[in-house]
Image 1: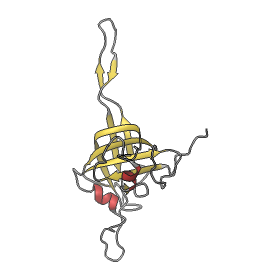
Image 2: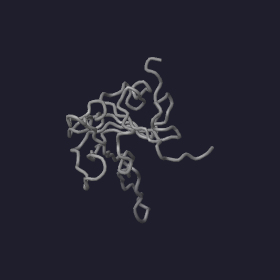
Image 3: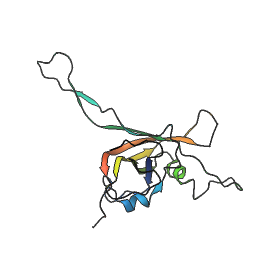
Length: 174
């Protein structure tokens, strides 16, 4: 099997209401969500597992430490591009949905990311691999250090739950 180039392959979807089974959302649930794939800056997108907490669990006879993994940790942040009506300057209702879903500190949403050989613009399908799904709470959006390029704010995402390398679930009730 050939390797797959990563460019343009991360699909990221935001659900503002919980799927029926958060650890196995259906393709219909994901495709009805906010497709954020083309609305987030690639260079600083973080949606990943992080080092687990560790516990020292050495036996009496062990010289030195013997750590074992404890609670799982995840890290997340995204910089959504802003979209404005060129005539009024107001946020563009149809295009600014990613920022609108994440702009208020304490907002909860469910995010799901796919990174396979499929293009990020391809719809979700049953059995797609989700490299990480999670329930997150947003922190305050942060202004970019430089005011160059497109208007965007970095939104820290605080994981409440995470599910790594899961699959898009079957149709609910099917």
